Image (cartoon, rainbow, N blue to C red; front, side, top):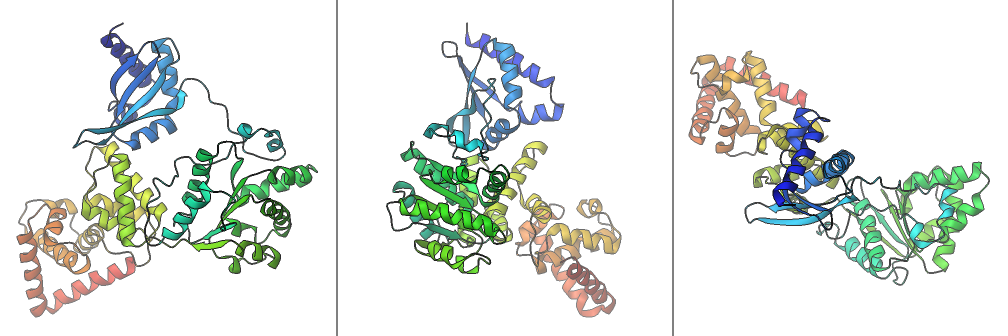
Length: 469
């Protein structure tokens, strides 16, 4: 069968998909997919995607639908690979295999490791490590705030239980990358030592498992299972502060693993000395290895993280927008990634470029920031509301006096309250050039010197800004 015939089968697959999604969903997520090739002997289909964001979205939401459509169109189980574009300008792409493998084959549900079902995992391969394999050292960007924990984490992953960093206790505020780092340790360790029993578990899940074991009178079995782990990684241990029985049980597990030289990695939002309710016998054990603080990333690291994500996902975000996001997102890695994902989704769905106005609008709704800096949208909304003029009229070419006044005041206040250059302000307010902005600011400043009523009006507008902030 020729490649054109295989392409026709893929086109038929697209028609089946189209019948099962909305037109907007089809145009957004399926029209950009490009058929590359099909290997009949291996039943292997290669498709090209515009970015890693597309790949992640398809794998998360449409893998079953695609599998069903491929099965009906090709009349066999098809193994799908994606050629993901990483740099359009230089024609660079990376090939990845669908996480579903033969994606129309239902994948077995991963066990939640709930007691007592976890006791069935007596063979190494039967134990689900519960790791997020996308959180690796490769995409954990290094900076001054995380250099020590990251370096130690790599050492532990490559030599589990054999270094002096046992236990390894990481603490830091929410969103600084703790969960990413401890997952990266587990992933690297599992790659190097596939037969080791590695387990990542949240403190909350551990507590649920323990409660189930108490209810079913299987506490000894529960403890025996955890004492069989080679690398135990526990996240958010501060949640045990009000659970003394859970802490006592963990103490016995910890003591057993430590004496056998098994690796223990713990993460918390505060250092051990600030963990209320934790007895000294456990606190001293937490402190006998290494306690490392993971600080919020500084501005430069935020920029590096954003640039790395853009490169990985094949995104094009202007440098000034990157700078704005980094300055505004609270130094939270989680917020940084969330903002970029949101901007990417908006850009794809509405087929628009990612620019400063979109970034300002999205961050205002997505990120809670103390003393949030004013944006162009904030200024336009307040000024237009004060003078009862629509933004559409402000952006128009009209020279009507009322519209010109609002335009000039908006430009003046934008220059006063934002860090944007005149050229950027002009682009965002009616696509004017920088000379128009400079002229507007001079006009407003001259009027403020001679018109007391105008001064009062601007004071009223600026007070409205303070109420919004």
